[in-house]
Amino acid sequence: MDLSGWVLSIAGMVILTVIVDIIIPEGQTYKVIKGVFAFVTVLVIAAPLPKLLNADFDFSRFFNGESNYVGYDQTLSDSIYEMRLEQTEERIQRALNNKGVQNAVISIESVNENSFAVIKKVEVNLSKAVINAVDGNIISVDEIDSIVAVTAGISCEVVFVYGG
Image 1: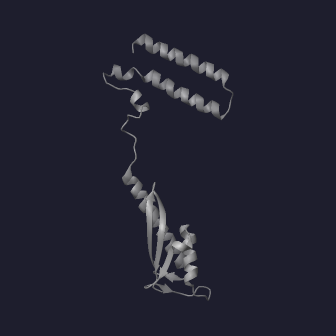
Image 2: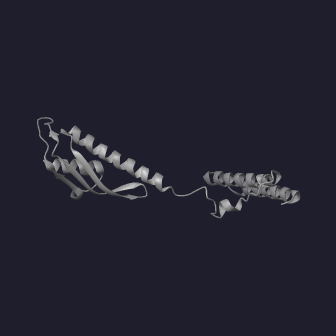
């Protein structure tokens, strides 16, 4: 692009921006369109800069999906999944501790769906647990099922309590 083409591009953007500014009413859409035009104007103004710096730079690759800078990071997704799984186990453990069940071993079987843990099964092993009376009552297996299901946001059918 030569200098005259660049100046004409800037002039065209200014004229187009003024026309759109007159036609579009005030509101949220106006702000969005104004932002888009500002961004495109910056691109038009910055277009000859790489040539001035003797660099081969093409803005079109960012808009054609050819950029290598944006992509899905499986490692990050797996880390988020593991973190959410651990947090769910900790919430279940705290909920059981609050009801007098200490040292229960929680095991969650789940799948990773877009960084979210979709829980398939929760096992609560009470073989080494200490169960204390809270408010004069000892908790039942059905109550443990219910607490785990509510805390994990799952159905009681996928909660298995054993070893008690």
